[in-house]
Amino acid sequence: MANAKRILIIDDHSLFTDAMRMALEERGLTVLGAAATGAEGIRIAKENEVDLVLVDLGLPDADGLEVGKAVLECRPEAKVLVVTASNDPDRVLETMRSGLHGYLPKATPLDLFMRSIASALRGQMIIPHRLANVAAGAMSDDERDARLRARQLTARELEILAMLADGASSAEVRECLVVSPNTVRTHIQNILSKLQVHSRLEAVTFAVKYGIVRPGGSQAASRRRASL
Image (cartoon, rainbow, N blue to C red; front, side, top):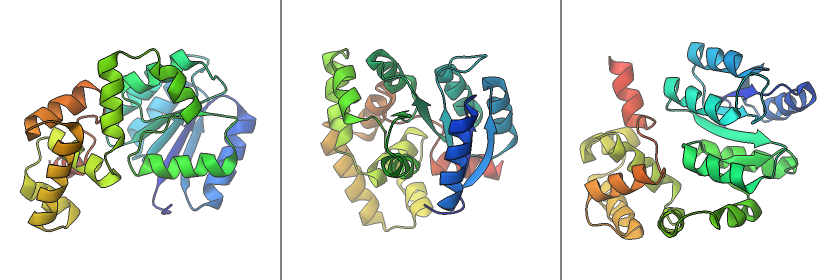
């Protein structure tokens, strides 16, 4: 994990936050802060660029899912992971539907925890298999089908799909990723094939409807904001 990555922890359990800060910093990541309340966490996110937010569900002043969504409103390029002691499948399902980027129980072994963080930073959705299987039972058939299709996408394909959702052209995708036109065409064809759709518009509509990507969080969107 590159040392440029900036992490924000929003959790009122000091033992967990202290241990997590140490583990992250040992791996070359920068911990911006450890907020004990949702309001403080949102303030820090507004004042600082952040790559990943770890947020507990049971904050003293707010529900962690709502805090995570508020962070994404001000930092749409960030990834937000719920980190909690709860193994409630209903909360897993809420996380999957909320637009956040994953759900990690605090009992997760440290090595797996850190691998999950690295995967989240690459744009992957993080849900433990055991909990995902239980939560999937509460999904509609359409939601389950959408998740199965989305699971086939690579990290690069998800990245390009997010750019398309932000209105990027093939030329903008090519410029952002520094790849050839043929490479962009191949990735887009793979996206259409895996999602079983026939056009970019269908792919974007499908991806946004089922929360596969979140508009406003791609490289293309970040570059446009930087140019304003």
